Amino acid sequence: MVHAPERPPSGAPPIRINLYSDTQTKPTPAMLDAMMRAEVGDEQHGDDPTVHALCDRMAALMGKEAAVFMPTGTMCNVAATLVHCRPGEEIIAHETAHILTSEGGAHAALGSVQILPLKGDRGMYSPDALRGALRGKSRHTPTQRLVEVEQTANTGGGAVWDRAVLAEIADIAHGAGLSTHMDGARLMNACIASGISAAEMTAGFDSVWLDFTKGLGAPLGAVLCGSRDFIDEAWRWKQRLGGAMRQAGVCAAGCLYSLDHHVERLADDHANAKALFRGLAQIPGIAVTEPDTNLVYFDTAGTGVASMDVVRALRMEGVQVSFLGGRIRACLHLDVTSVMVDEALQVLRGVVARG
Image (cartoon, rainbow, N blue to C red; front, side, top):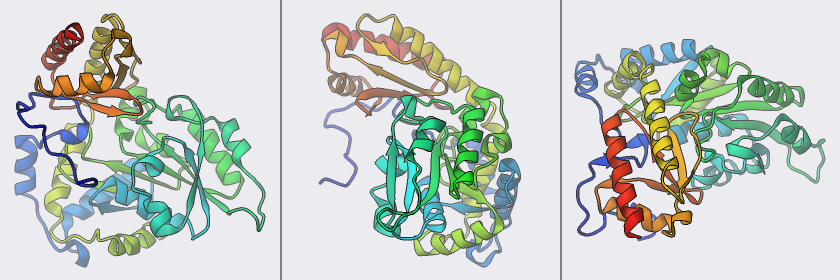
């Protein structure tokens, strides 16, 4: 099978240290308790008080007028671009942006829009690169409609966009008559790392969403925020995309719990990422990038062992990492402790030594 997820390799032991992704987190007992006790109603009928509480809180957190609860972050991105853009129009984004590399071509398939990829270090393009990509209107070229950024930049190593750069990009886009959208999958990681509030970080962006299934540790859900008119139109696309839910307060309660208990602790993941970086840097032949947040990217070619071989060998030792953008990625999250980081380094040293 090509498109279905692969099952664990035959004979592989249980995973004891999961550095594959922060999407791998399990709900804590306290979060599950909050979900079990959630007051619910029919979300489609406007009767779910817990969903309303989450959306109202998120709109206030992001400094926007309204919000809508979605099953996934990808649906937030797709719904947002479908609201912003008409068929035949163009989105400007970094060449490694999630909307371009990881959403199955949804924006072209469903919205008939194209994405103009910009280059830039660490998953971020510069204001000058954006200026250079803008062009006047012509019947020969697609109308440019939307400028998109990803905070943090995943393939860029979990890099944090500088707030001043984001403000300049938003000003350039709006000055040219384009709208702005922020993929905020790991937005709270950026806020904790920089000390900048979510509302300040997203100021100037017409739409933004936050994923609760990554560092915040909820089992399901993302919230898209914007103006009232924008969110009203996003509801129509939510329906079309199959995002309609019923007693969704069960899941929204997990998201609310994460806002209360799992935001500040993201600093622990960042500290563990730094510790992993320091340990990797001490292994001869490993090239590793210092992390801004919770993602550590490294390459083992200098050890004489190919990175994909290392990924497979680690899995057979009960340690799971991912391979992304030509490098190994280790993701730190609430289910990974500092003790696990030390153990993962020990296992990796053994794998490299054995060749």
